[in-house]
Length: 172
Image 1 (cartoon, rainbow, N blue to C red):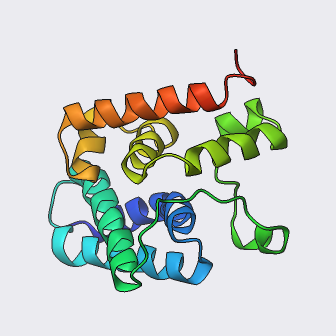
Image 2 (image 1 turned 120 degrees about the horizontal axis):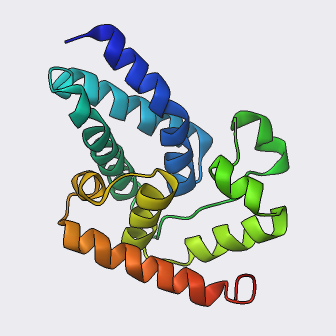
């Protein structure tokens, strides 16, 4: 195991992992705990795996930690993408949207997009976030979600169709 490579990988993923966890659980502190736990589990159990396997493993662990959080707290709700409150803006380095989305969308359009995302079922949200925002391949997303590539394609397609329908007045 190359400790430097693992540290570099974790540093490259920490901000995006925090955004995903924060969007899912809605709590800054819980999101930090979830990301830290996911990172520790990757180091403990999978550090000896090839570097190319770390991203899907890490996002699978992260997803499992989020689901564990919901089970532990007996919360049964969809993953919610929330806007960062004005008083919490300093806690999150970037907005939830990737740079490409922020440059194309105004604040009002981005709010509409995040609202439409929050209305999607959890698996569709997860597929959309991993495929579109994270840029993962179908295979990598399937590994992260713990399902088949066909399921990823179905969830992603349904998410895109629902978003197109919900936002058709913005992008005809």
